[in-house]
Amino acid sequence: MKKLISAILISTFILTVFIPIFFVFSYAEETRDELFSIKKTDITADAVHITGGYGSPKIKAVWGNTGCESDPRCALIDREGNILLDWRDTWLTFTVSDGIASLAGNKYESYRLVSGEADRPAFYTLDGRDAFDYSGIATSSPMINGRAVAFTEAYHFGTDDIPGPVIIDNKGNTVYSLPDEYGRIIGVGFDENMTGWTCLASTGYISEGLLPCSQFPVGEDGRPLDVYSADKWYYLNDLGEKVIDLSDVVPVKNNYPFYNGIARVDDLFGKSGFIDKTGKTAIPFEYDNATRCYGELIGVCKDGKWGYININNEVVIPIEYDAVYGGEGGYASVGKNGKYGIVDYKNNVVIPLEYDDISGFEDGVAYAVKDGIIYIITLNKNNPFKDVPEGKWYTEGVLYCFRRGLMSGTGDGVFSPNAKLTREMFVTILAKIDGADTSAYAGTSFSDVKTGKWYSKPIEWAFRNGYTSGSGGGKFGLGDPVTRQQLAVFLYNYTKKKEIDVSGLADISGYADAGKVARWAVTGMRWAVASGMISGTGNNNLSPEGVATRAQVATIVMKYMDRFLK
Image 1 (tube, helix red, strand yellow):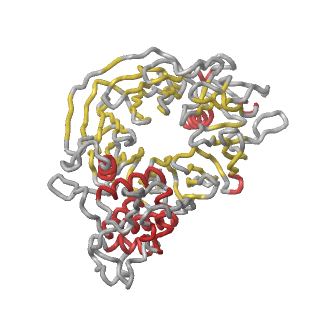
Image 2: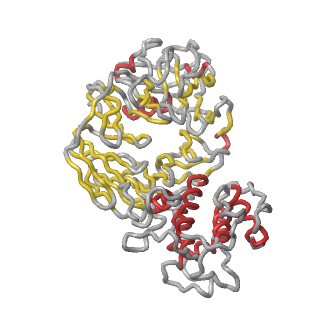
């Protein structure tokens, strides 16, 4: 029953409760290694959630024979351990998006509320002030990407129509209203144990401009024919228009919000997969469970074990854990045997599995609980390279690639930003960007590439997948520095093969050295210029044959991933 109630509340709407704020806690201790800093705070909690780089510590409810015997609570802290929003009675947690902290959840007592008696939802700025006037709204979803689903009444027992929910923005303005039937939440056979809850329609929350919705079949009396199963599943856009209808995709049981261009959908056979924004299957329905897409990663479950895949459905971190909580930048949170920690994308343990709870890893930080105390785990922001000073045009790109495990230093604490990058080095970076498992790519298709070398399998992977055809004459061009036009073609081929739109092509005829662009590289260079991957080098030149330095490659990779692979 607890799981059923939780599922209904999460998929439909969430109540909120207001309490004043402002406390700051000091640290008891701090430990530090080369990669991470770990700070122990004085904040006690049972669990912790991460939201936009902030932490939301939680006190869990105590359940008894008749339901919840104590109020669950949550707060909001920053990565320094300062409490921004003090403890509130709530069901779920705080969510931070677009500078707005929304309190998602409700107290157990609120389940018993009838129309018009619910507490109002809570939307705050991060200094604790009310974010906007939300009078007239009884309950809402979290504010995600500047949109929230707000109901004018919390619960309604019976069949009379009540106003449907409205979509509000992060200033409290109404964007559009949903049909009235979305306001009809009905309790059937309701008793003190909440037996028989069901609804006529439900919504999730808006993310990436799309709102997941479902509708339940009803009889002549207006009550659901099936207490547990909807028969219509779809997504609405920001105008309230139906843009994705899942009726022709798979037999659907649940649909969820979009993240990074894909959304989890569960079928009637208990399998989870993902669709894209056209409604097509992006990842097959072959998993027993799944998380949303966290940047480069998706948590998936098979046969009771969890791991991570990328958007190409390739395993990045083995499916061998008891739990996963999300990650980015080369690191991800995992759990095994009741303990939790962090691994990198090569499955090396970087934070030991010794915590009682842990959040996902996001924006360089994770929050963990040990013996009832919150710990803050921060990826060190210190620049490890003595030849990459702060403020240079390439500094951000170098650190971006380093922290994601895409590029490393050249030894003795240096990155060598002006050094040349070879073709095999870039293909290896491309394989890391993809999250590809290159272990199956044995053999070689080029006369100058030997097997068994560090670069052999990435080169073969790139060739077989159509990202490179070599440098001519049956050779790959091993040891040759990658040129700017070669770099453009590598990325163009990769992007096109991934079915990402590459139709935007710039007119490069105005560059003084446009005639030096090789015929085979013209389309790639036009795309790279149009997409902002490559720009002029001064004196109105493109320098297509110029050698790409490590600093240039790092910057281009950062731009590429931020634009095309977010």
